[in-house]
Length: 400
Image (cartoon, rainbow, N blue to C red; front, top):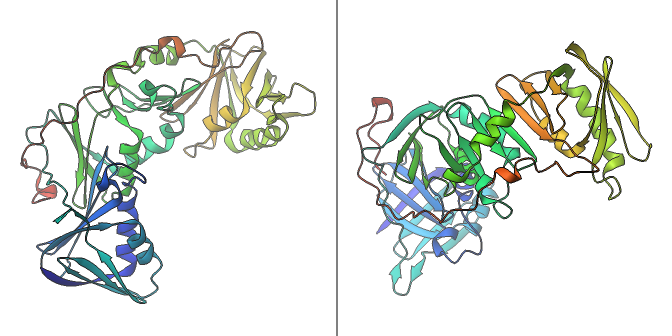
């Protein structure tokens, strides 16, 4: 086997950079640090894995003889990214990949014993239980707005993902929760954050989601992502979260996002030490929200308007948590709902965020703790994936 191909450096560097997002350092699985480079029928593909996810990226219109090789990705990706020549040449044979750019660099083909390392073939799921086509931009919105409210798998794995419910996409870390009011799937599904993050590496405007058993795939004309549903899908506290969403916050005001962000960023400079523990008092007064610290070193207000059922209200909040809630760019204004002793709520567009209040006498910050259930046994990911199904014309003729 010997093949020589020429590639635009910028395009190949971008492709390698995106593929490297699905790798894992210091993994006992040798494949997690490798990349499969494959040319078949004029289509160049890169395949990587982080052991949970398997990513394939494709680029059509590459001339050369078919080949398939596997090499270590780390140094290879860095060399390509630092190449200043507009074009690079790859020469592939049975033992190595030689890259010619600013210089000439040789990368040995990975072997186990006397045999070359190979990735197992992947085909699209046949006869899927769920098939949904949607805009890639919608997935990016989910990552953007729900992503900073995901729990840590080390603290509580049952909330360490995106839960696609019957009417909302929900995430929570136990202290704050985010609801994106969009129905994506007919059946509740929870996805790992690392899986959804890799969809940001797709270049197409549309992506198709397939599900069969515990296995899932996202694919487009230029990429395929294979993974499995979150093992704690059935443990996610969806009903308790919806109860908090429906909870009563009798009063509301509107504030400019930039104004309240600026106030909180300044207040945070006074409450970031251990004595304050990152919290501040939030006082809802006539036409303003006033923030003060425990030691009386700071007092700053932000104007508000359009008050509804207004009653003065005093609460203690996490300043970093509140700033996290305001990390939005969908509107210049946000509606702040208050009057509930447990939480405050913010609404803007299709997004609702809820933050647990802090309390000197009683810890109410982990408002979802009692709703959490014990982790279930890990689901198996060994189910076989079927053959290629019939797809819509716009996404047909894909052979991975």
